[in-house]
Structures are given as C-alpha cells and as structure tokens.
Amino acid sequence: MSSRDASGREPAALAMRIGVVAAEAALATFARNLDLDDLASGDVDFQGAISPSEWPVFSLVIDTLAEASPGDDRPLDERRADALNDLARICLAAKQRATAVA
View 1: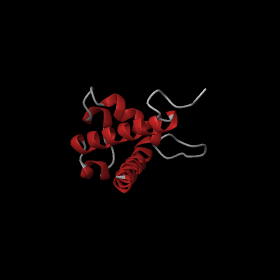
View 2: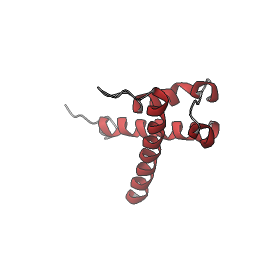
View 3: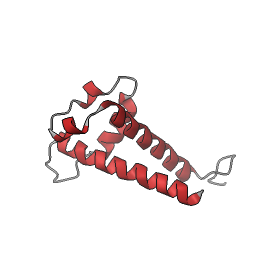
View 4: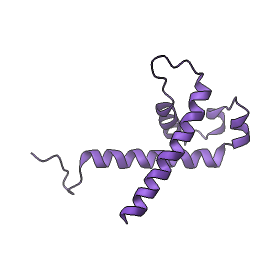
C-alpha cells in the first residue's frame, strides 16, 4: 500500500502545507490586530485583540510555538513574544522556499 493519496501527494508534505497555511494565517492575524509598540511594552491581551473567528487558528499556532520546554520558567507572554519571532521566520522561510521552487 502506498503512502501517497489519490493525487500522488505525500501525507507529510500535505501536513507541512497545512502547517504553513496555518502559520501564514496566524501571522496575518497578528499583523492586522496587534501593534508592535504594545507588544514591546509587555502585557498584550492576545485574545482581546484577536477576533473570535480568527482566535482558534492564531492561538493554536502561537501556543504551540510558545509551549514551555522542561525547565523553561519564562512567563507565557515572554514565550509568546518569542513565538511571534519564530512565526515570522517560519513564514519567511516558507515564502523563500516557494520562490526558489517556482
């Protein structure tokens, strides 16, 4: 049995594409709704700033990236700020890869 679907695409590649799409949607949500100056000052109410319709994807992506590893005692807001940087790097790398492949 093949690990490809009927269209010939690998499941891992499809999962990665879904992840990139979710990351791009989360970054776009951030760009539309949050101010960098507010983020720099700390205490950003992410859920209050993001619309309820956009919150599920945004929170899934940000909270996944901001998950604390063992021994990481940084507060959630600090981990989320780092997660936003990671998110921007993921989206930039995906865009550069798409441009290189095209």
